[in-house]
Image 1: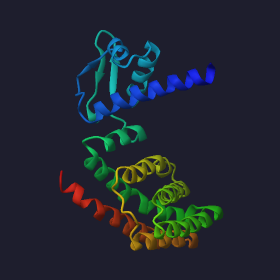
Image 2: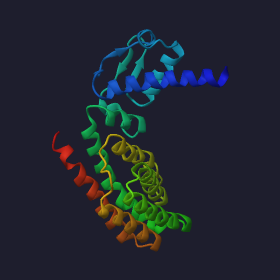
Image 3: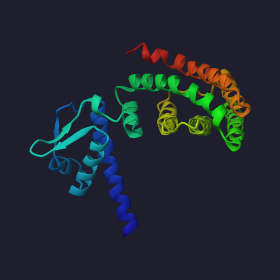
Length: 239
């Protein structure tokens, strides 16, 4: 009973968490709305334990606040942990998708070129070799139109450089970048085949990092993210 039972509880918990999290982040449950464990149990048909754990996680993300005699109150966006990958995904999945993509792209433009430059100084020999290998493999997959495999390597590439930077705060953004890269693909916002310029720039970044050329790595990464920004502009203009 153990594994199956626990798996069932986890699935129920994820369903409740994702549903309420999405309702809060898309504005369906507005700031000040009061949730109760009883209503959550009744709505989703879950135990009090699942309802309570769901609220605990949402509170850890800043989406709700629990206070005695007040209840569980939905919080404004200013209180959210906007770097939590689940919060990012909910925002990408809801009505605020375009604004969230803009915020994330601007964050990447601000951080990743500096991280690439730092990686050129601080990366280990293994990380330098790996960056070149991943970029080369990305070209092969990209030119073949194997988008799902390409996406996973794209995530690996950018995560590698953030972590190889030697800056623990840059490294902590690896999961954030992974969510937006995966989200762009799953939401149908990626071309069926990566543009040649993007493939070239990934390899330029990788070779600059491998050779310890920080200024070149920074410049190539900035150019790469400019391509991403340009692809997003039509969405941003709708806001």
